[in-house]
Structures are given as C-alpha cells and as structure tokens.
Length: 117
Image (tube, rainbow, N blue to C red):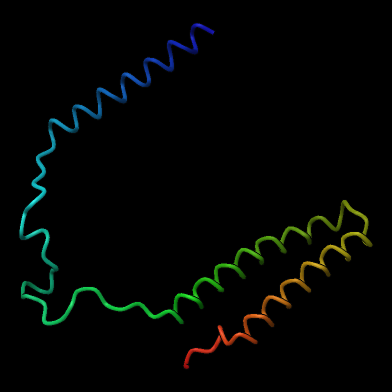
C-alpha cells in the first residue's frame, strides 16, 4: 500500500517538474503578427481564410461514420454463429438490420442523402 502511494507521489512530482521545465525552456511569443496571419504563398490573402463549410458534406460524412461503426458491429456476428443458438442469432441480427434499414429510410425520407437542394 505504501509503495503505491510513493509511486503515485513520485509520478506526480516528475510530471510537475517536467511541465515546469518545459514552461521555462520554451520561448513562445503569443502576439507575433506573422504567426497570426493566414499563409497563402507569402502573399496577403485575397479572400477570407475561413471558407464556409458545406452542411451536406458534413451530413454525408456523419452518415458514413455511423454505417462504418454498424459494419464493425455486424462483422463479429459471423464468428458468434459457432458458439450460439442459431434462432437467437438470427433474431438479433434481423432486428439489428431492420433498425439499420429503418434509419436509412428515415434519412432518405428527410432528404438528408440528397446533395442538392
């Protein structure tokens, strides 16, 4: 028990010493004008450096991530078939795929999948 406390105290002390050392050694200039300006091949930018973000692209990316995670959930069910009852496996897999299809239908019905307005 005492060894655990000593280890925790030593790790906190070493971390604090390293953070203080980095703070003293680093030479940062927070208000440097050259670092705060956007870089465009050495010239001043002609337009805003912040481009508007397409909401359709964002929605497609989120939907892709969701379906990607769902595929990761579905893949292990193939291995589970060797160790489980086939009726329960079939029921669970069918319910999961029906939920996915209903979600896709909902997205399609609300025109989330359409790229144009």
